[in-house]
Image 1 (tube, rainbow, N blue to C red):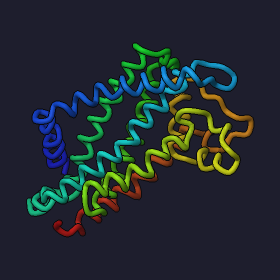
Image 2: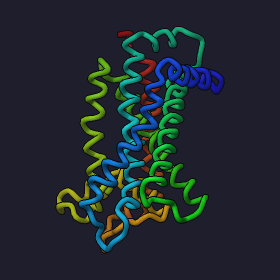
Image 3: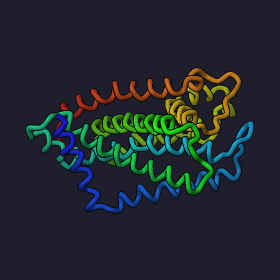
Length: 262
């Protein structure tokens, strides 16, 4: 299982030699996101109670980047299905779970590389910086990696369930992208309408962003009567990520085994 997983992860890395533009995109995209949100939007936004907006924003951008890995995972998985690659893997004497696990491991490592590039850009171009030491900073990035892994498996399950890469992209992006805004990603949730705020407060993305801000020591304005997930963000983020993995890992493996050739 472990050997097959690493071999299949290497397959995904070898693709970068033929498509170096994808790796360049990982390095350029962080700069675009930081300039767009920190400088363009940040010039018109102030935090309740004060604090630097770019320091508040960067954990949200980090989370959004990891959340959107679900889109790439869905389209990549469905492309492998429709092109017959997964059918060929299923005919080989390899561990069934290794096909998905190896590919998703490679996806996670690539996204962590992009996250590192984004963090470096944020250090150089904004006022963001972690302030609570090495262990807390590592824990913050660990939570982001775990959340990204959970979202990759969500995307994998969607990719195995739909008929084409285009539908996989639409079936993931159309709900995921708005959900990254319906959270405390860019602004605190206390300014939202009363009927919308509970959804934002209990959004797993809000818990992850709040946890990362707390671990990095970044500004995190909170209302006097904050919801439970925002009062215990680290525990809530862990629970959401582990819960998503517990549901979508076995579901994805089951769909992989039952998937008919396309």
